[in-house]
Amino acid sequence: MKYKKNILLLGVILTVAFTSSKYSYALDNIIRPYQSVRSAGMGGVRLTTGIYQENFFNNPARVTANEEWRIQLPDPMIETSSATITSASDIISSTSGSGASELITQIADKAGTNLHGRFQMTFPAVYIPFERFSFAAALITSAQFDIDLRRSYQIDPMVYTDIGPAVTIGRKFLDNKALSLGATAHITYRLSSTSIFTLSDLIQGLSLSPTQTGSDGAHFDLDFGATYKLPWRPFDASVVTALTINNFLGGKYENLGLSALKNDSTPRAQPRTIGLGISITKHVFWKFYDATLAFEITDIGNNTNGSLFRLLHLGGKLKFLFLEPRVGLNQGYFSAGVGMSLKLFDIDFATYGEEMTLNAGGLQDRRWALRVSFEI
Image (tube, rainbow, N blue to C red; front, side):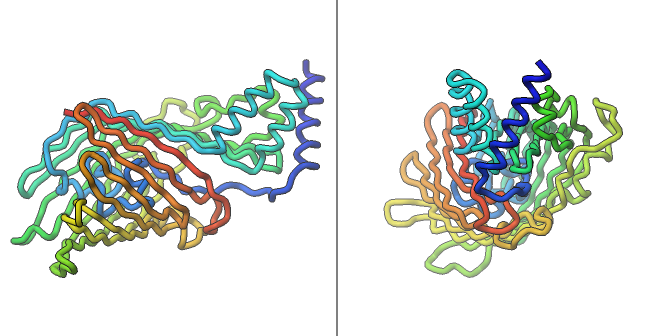
């Protein structure tokens, strides 16, 4: 058995070496603790437009924009990428087809790409808006994997599982309620991978599971945010600006001293970030309403050595009957989506491109996301 594994390993290395047409590099996508399907369809804008479940990890001041009381029932969100779907299909077919040689070829063909998946849920949750003061609380669960199969015969698995409660409060100020300030307090337990594996490790049976080779920890952290509605009303539209600071205490998952693995290491941190944004909303626009266009710079501090263009987001939406079509540019890549508000549940669907290198235009990871939300 060991002899066969060594032969397979040699075949993988030789195939990768002689069929490679891409460079060998590590992928450097920006990791975010929460991903909104609504925001993804709008190019990643969220600081000036986010509501309800987006209050907790983006701009807490937007809790004052929630229009009605809501009790959140299960709202599963799943996300994957075109490369993941194709890779899974090809590798599965190869294992049931021509045997080891076909499997080696498929592994080599996938080198230099990223395999991505995410599951997320904000449940249970409650949102309570008043005239000036608003409140929201939720238990948030998120699991994400990004597995980079490099052409240097290494596998870099970025696997995260986060779970914990979050509480957001916000208040409107000034006589015209133009200024909103908000804060979110969250306790999060994170389990994440920390190791880079070689193909030899994988073939020898070393587990990629974070529970076997990763680290864990928990932290208490704070987010702060503000929005201000400008007195300027071009074309009778509302103009809103935003400023946020997320993970104010540093996001290192160690200040609570909680660890189940007891391996003296902490999971990958979620760095302190700053965000800026501006949006314009025309509440009645021909046969549509709430037509919005937003531009934001986010993840400042979560983009080490990366290009400024990876921080830029532009997007818009409008409403018509029960539909909300969305479109935008995320890090320069096209995004689109649609939201449907039905009687018993809401559905959000989006596709967007995520930059996987440090420079815009380096390597696009085309992703697809779906969220089904039940609420009362």
